[in-house]
Amino acid sequence: ARKALPRGAALCALCLVPPSEAAGIVGEGGATLLISRQAREGRAVSAALTLGQRDANFPRDLSEILTRSNAAVTASWDFSDKQQTKEWWRRRLGLDQELSALLRRVEESALGPGAVFLMGEPTAMAAKLSSEVSAACPHGVGEDAASPLSLVLLHARTFGAAAVRDQIAYCLSCDEREGLDLDELASAFVSRSEALPPLRRFKPGPVLLALDGRCQPFPWESLPRLRGQQEVCRVPSLRHVLWWRGRAKRGEGGGEDVDWGSAYFLLNPSGDLVGTQGRFEAWFADLDGWRGHSGEPPTCSDEVERMLRAKDAFVYFGHGTGERYVTRSTVERLDRCPAAFLMGCSSARLAPTAGGQGGGFLLSYLAAGSPLCVGNLWDVTDKDIDRLAKKVLESCVGGGEATRLTASTLEDARRACKLPALTGG
Image (cartoon, rainbow, N blue to C red; front, top):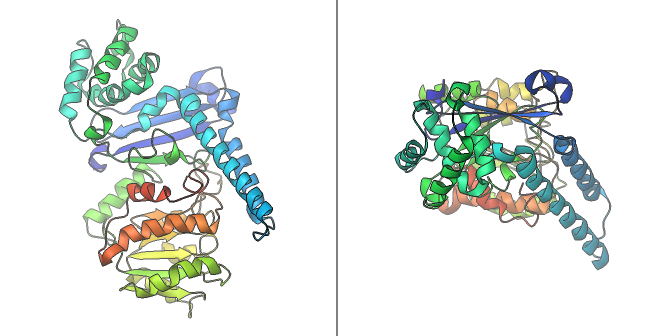
């Protein structure tokens, strides 16, 4: 199955196990964060990270920040009053800083050494890394360990010897660790890593995140080590990746590339997002190959379904997921599903389900074969998310030439946000 992964990509699965279920995994302790990584080459690596009470509470801490954010957004504000405007920004900036601090804490304390397994595979100078690993490691280390150990060596200079020791241990079997001086090997990795060229020269590949229901609400893509360093996107599971790539290879469902010159849009269909409509209406009307509605809902009941079958992209600026205008069952029965760009509040949020994986409308698009879906994990303010959306769409259709929307496109667009964590996250 790993050979069916995109070349250069790594699949990273995260699962948060509560204390009541974690005892059989790591013995005594608190909650456990399980990380499993599989690249196209080399062995899979798994790590079970026991979390203290403070670290294990990161989902609750995120929820508390977002609750206060939503309360501030829904409160009545008179922006003609300078004091109220100042107070609005004071609260919003404070929440943004709190979320940034939470992201740092999760990376440094909860993930710790395990953060290296969320980094992209080096797609350039791999032979150089492999030779460095071979020179540092004694005989007896399996050949398929070279790939994960190369990742560890590449990032060793930013983690330090103590963390690298744990990372090496995660990569090796019990037999391979037997008789090894892990402290000495970790020091050798750090020394060799410090002599390597800058990280960008190794061209880290994309990371595909598969998250369980407890991990899904958290913005892992915005962890300091990931943000701005590489492409990160979410996938439902490895099975979905294999299924979708099989469809694309057979020429089913439209393939991997999206023609952003062929789009259907619903812009403020409820009529109450006047500012958003004003920022996009004239532009959308001028785009060749774009059809849709501004300030009004679709004119007939089957229009959205027909357009989803005919167009390469669906662009939605409204409330929520747009389920008022197109149902999940309609999307799921499509034999050809476009890319979905859903700029409603919480359009990408998955609700808890009995199976623990989470469920939401966005998954219906993916189940129908959509090549990509973009949405918001929580409620956002229209002006800031409009800035991000405008940057993304400009990069896709700028100059009239269709281009690819990638995780890097989104990362570049996040820089347009005034609240880089709260909105750009």
